[in-house]
Image (tube, rainbow, N blue to C red; front, side, top):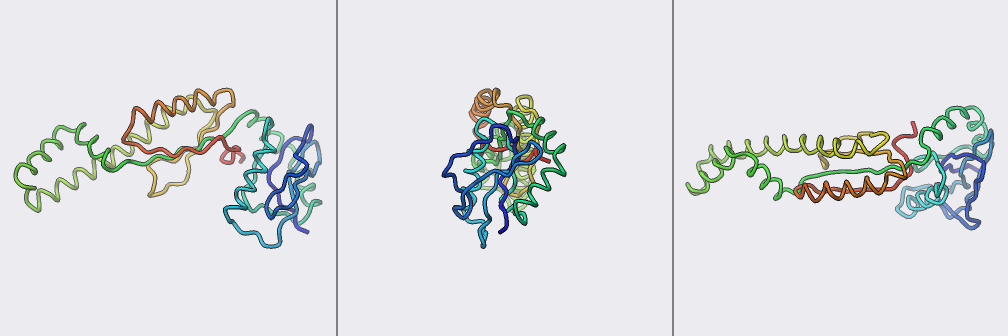
Length: 236
C-alpha cells in the first residue's frame, strides 16, 4: 500500500497522539531512519483535495510540530511504501538535518494585502493636490466633458497603481526586520502584496502586534493573515 507523507522531523522524542488520524481517516505513524522520522499514514486509494482532507493534513502537521521543528510536505505527497520513505531519509539525511537546523523554533506567517477601493480613492485624492483639484473642477462643471472624465480616470488609475507599489514596499519594510527570512508569494491580480515571513517563535508576539499597528495606520488596506503555519515556503 502507498504511504502518504506529512512531514519530516528528528526521530528523538517523536510522540504522536495514539488515535491521531490523517487523510482518509488513516492512522498516523512514524517511519524512522538515520536519526530522522517521517510522519506518515497509509494513503487512501482515492486522494482528492477536498477541504476535509486538507484540514486533516494540516491537523497532523499541527500535532507533529507542537514544540518541535517539522519540515512540512505539500498536500498529496505519496511514496510507494514505507521502505521507499526510509530510503529517501537515508539518502538525503544531511539535507534534512541542515533544513531542520535552519528552521529550528520558527513558524511561517503569510500576509496578503489588497486595497479597499473606496478608501484608497480617498487616500490618493488626499495625497495629490493636483488630482484633488481636477476632481473638484469636474464636479463643479457637472462632471466635466467626456475627454476630461477619461483623462481624470486614467490619472486616478495611475495614482492607485503607484499606491499599490508603495504599500507593498511599506508592508515588506515594516515586517521584514521581525522575520528571519521572507519569501514572496506568486503574483496574483487579486493581491497587491503576497509575502511569507519566517518568524522565530519568541518573536511571534512582536510580529503580530506590529502587524496590528500597521493595519490601524493603513485603513485603506485589507490584510489577510494566515499563521502560525509550518514553514512551507522555506523548506527548500
